[in-house]
Image (cartoon, rainbow, N blue to C red):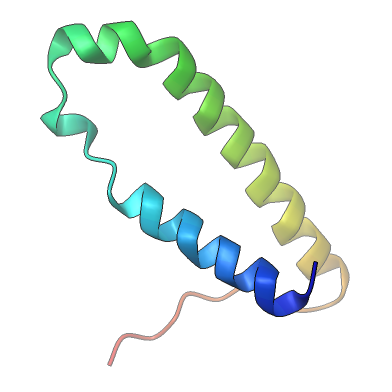
Length: 68
């Protein structure tokens, strides 16, 4: 997969996550989905940490973009 394809997929994932609004879920829905939600959040955390660690291992910093 090319770098451009990877970046496009990452941007799509960020966009999809931006659409998640757990506060709008009913209590019952949240209780029904908590197992899957927890698994997804743990997997995301693991993968994001791996990518960030690989970037840092190359001597680069991960910085928050400065808003205009």
